[in-house]
Image (tube, rainbow, N blue to C red; front, side):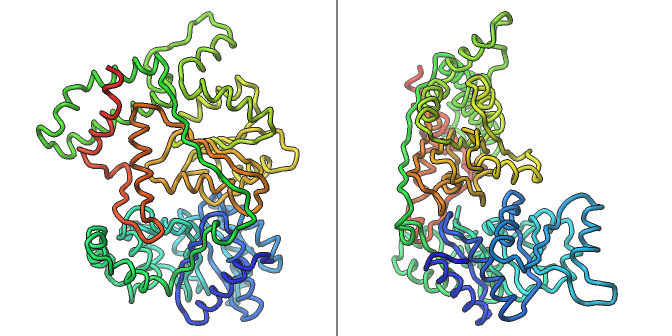
Length: 496
């Protein structure tokens, strides 16, 4: 089942933690096969120690992959996906979960569910004594005030916990300590106090704190990187591609800044707190739309009523700096046998990219937050099939950037960078992982002299000291007013 020595080491580590009753985090970098290590772990507990049932919580998009891995590597394990309509779930409970009436035995060994289903059906799960709980993409438990966190802490009976996350620390120390509190609430009792004690400001002032944090965390963590263990993995290269605004984009960009001149000018003169931050975020969103394509931000129809389909396609390309680059880039990639993933944070951006792909005559797949869970796995399978005619896969960064395997592609285009750099890293990991046989190229598109340059700079800066525990990485919604103003004004002098 396990073909690499580091995965065998991972299985042995998981078994050791189980025997010592120590909850743990398997924090291998994305693409190192955390799923197959857990399948092997569960199979070992079942076959060697007669342990079951198990519960695996995972994002909906990854559950099909979990089912495939159990069917492939542990076919004797009965893995049940708890999903569907109310009637479907009743059937699953009666015929796939619960044993015959009067029996305390269960018909299944592994219960697969997404986090939302766990919330909605907590009464069912509360009655099942699980031998172990596995939380895939476990950084979802970083907020100790969330209903998901509280539900798992209070309503699920488990003997052992394992968290899977290639990015266990995404934003700040408090979130990491919340994860540790979830795993071991007795030893990590007060995350708030720990975050205060080991916050980023203290780390800057005291070089003994990082080793101390490591001492606390080491018993719970196993972390390997691709660079360390996958010497056979093809190389990857990342290129930031600077894009110029088209003339239409420049006019729209200037218009947004001019319209909001007084608001932007007032920042720093009078602190207005949240009252100012909200409209600034709206301005920021408008500017990001313009950078992605002017059609997303303009309230007027830019298409002549008597234009042909070919004319409309040319207008759409010429109106946007990114499309003007994307057109020759994709044609070259297609001609040279490459296959491409395009990630954007925004569904509306994927809409217009989809129009562009259709105009170019490319076959493609698309997954975003509205894609039904039941069809996502089949779309991924279709794209990965040998001889597939699909050239491009469109994905929203946060929906398509977790837990899926698209190694049949070898090129990633980040159409717009995420505030959280780990989201883009997870997107790239869909391609650069075990099973990839070709060198991987990542293109990050970034519009010159715009908020995109500023966002990319701030995003990249968040990766500093990531390997040794970094704090103060705040999400977009937590950016303060002065920082928002700085982002909005970035590059403005070049436009006026």
